[in-house]
Image (tube, helix red, strand yellow):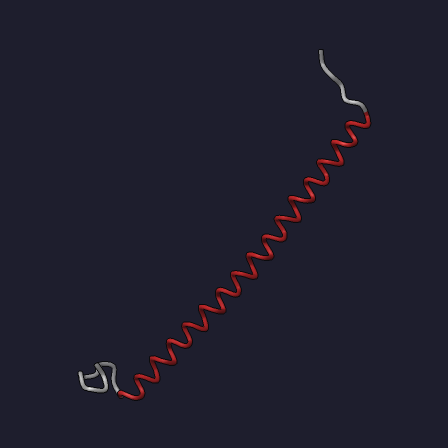
Length: 76
């Protein structure tokens, strides 16, 4: 025997499906925005670290006048 749903039951099911779909869509959009924000923050942080490394290396190179430095008391 096949059970048929009443009109009220179908409308509740349809409302539930719509609300569930909107919830999943909102969650997807929220996660996408958050992921983009975190990726941008990480990229900026890594760029700052890379720039700082380059500045430190150039400062060291300027003080020593060449890449390879002999061992002395100042440069171990």
